Image (tube, rainbow, N blue to C red):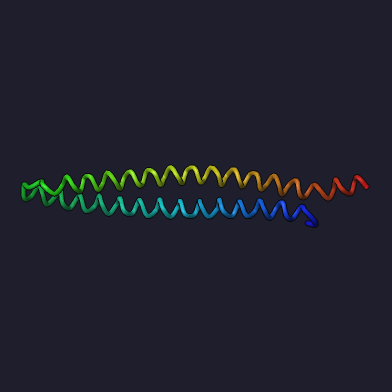
Length: 113
């Protein structure tokens, strides 16, 4: 590409790269949140089993609150991931359209001469 055409694509590419980074961060956040939730649930399962064996249920309430908080973090992370994926798909489609237009531009310019 020559002239201002490459600048337009480069500006767009930088926006696409930022969307890709956000998507990658969102994926990592979901993975971390799911892991934290899994750990919390496993801990809760062990404590519940122990509580039933001992017939003492005092510390379980705190763990249920922790599990609920971890679940909410996981849900927020998954919603952010869904929004990030939507932006990425939109940007990908726009990039494909822009590339198609950029490829057509030299043909149009040639026809004008």
